[in-house]
Length: 352
Image (cartoon, rainbow, N blue to C red; front, side, top):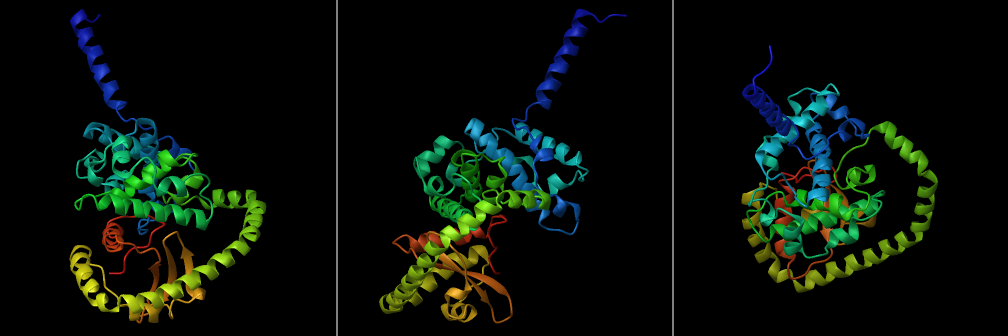
């Protein structure tokens, strides 16, 4: 028995609607099954780093979406929900539980364009209006991100640009993620699906076998880079040390009277909003043994990071800012707020 023309019409219409619904996600998540990401955190129910891993993995797709459409997030909840469902399906094909996506990424509204997200930015055109045609990301996040120095400069650039954006609107959220997606999807020439970009900018950990293979392939070039940079690094460290000594002396003589007033003002703005713990300069000097070069563990364009041990035995990283201008206080407050609300493998959390 055949279908009447009217029944056939409705049947085809339903198929069409179903097809549109199933294909409403603009991101191809097939990379989830082929990219050499380290899935071990999500195989251990007690490993809290699984959610950070999935956020970074989903971020590859968002950065690629930004590159293709100039949009940071999805235009509506239907697209967002469909993409989360597709992402979940790809994870299930790798034998991960269905609940991981909802537990780690939240609901679909988290990825829909919202005026409260980062000073109202929705597209790359909005970004350029707020940040300008070029920024620190363009000079720090392009090319091969292999190596702690290159990666550190890029992450710090993202941190400073996100603080700049946050200062435009005190209620802004997600500015650091905007900077990450822009750096990976727009700035970096290799794109977000390149392991070098994903590891540094998106904070994704690679599978150990892929990491070992990459190390073997780049061993010779790494040796050349290390020995070639050693002389320059020693000179930079010595110069940095002299600059630190001079600035510490200069600050103690010029800003001693203003210090207490500054501390009181910043405490009033930072602590109620973040719950962060305030340490005095004397405590930090004691923890780092006076900021000696032997305790220096990292360096960026605007500061030096030292390893320290608090009186209770907690190991911490202490950043000493070198570039302090007229906007230094405002940027510091913004940066503290950002660190308190983001998750990224290449950034330490605040001590609370």
